[in-house]
Image (tube, rainbow, N blue to C red; front, side, top):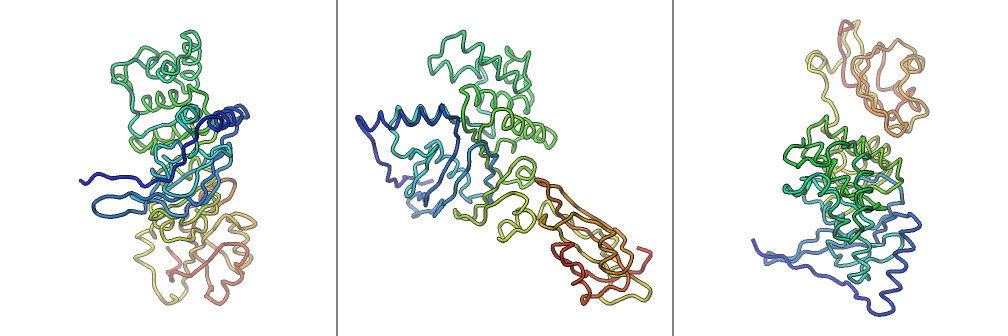
Length: 377
């Protein structure tokens, strides 16, 4: 494979300007901020095969204290974007601001200080197999030259926080995948960061362990108030923990907003494709009996979609009243995200046609007739 070179416009800072940036960084850190701003960010990789626009015109702000998700299909630019926050990747154009400071202007000293304010959790844990849990967690503090007593106290604190009391002297080979990730989280928290970056942190875990890790991250966000920015290719992870989500497609912003809005009314094909695994097909027994034309004595099968923006959630009595007929629930997938009920219901109702679906306006996001069935379905 041809080697990649990176085109960059980073601006070095020297002398008094260096100290000014470092001082501003310390002030921002002390204020307990944790905001991130991307301004017209672009990233180009160059190789023998030509230029690749990994990121293009990324412009958005992540407020301090949020749990913010970045999602996209493989090659969408998620990892490249995340790595610009700690400057493991340098933008080709535009700026990244952490707590209002342009990190592209940081020299090595300021950059080291910045990275101590940014914890990072990895997909494959990145633990040192020859070191115990205590030693793995303590390593960043050892490198920073923190006194041994303070290291011991802080390690005890973070291991208790992630639920690993009594595992101090255990080696990684004796831990489950979930426990290894908890060690990784403890290590990321040991410096008391403002921002926690999560790079596919649950992709190597089974569903049950994934839920426990996501709950832990949510609890950490609430108790410590730090910003969590995570990348994933799974919408179920976004739904479980995030407040806002950015959908990337081919290095550009497809859409962005509160999770309930993006899930309830996706605007881009990429978002709809990512959400598809969360939806359910029409049950086979109903699909097999569905007829395109009305059935004598039968019922219409209605698909009702709730975006979460309706004045009330699903209410069969309100639907019956609006349609002027009884309504039977056949099938449903309703989630509650950030206090908003959204999803799809399949109901059966007599005497309903396309012309009187207008009566459902305000009760549902959208409604359509899928077909007709005999009333004994």
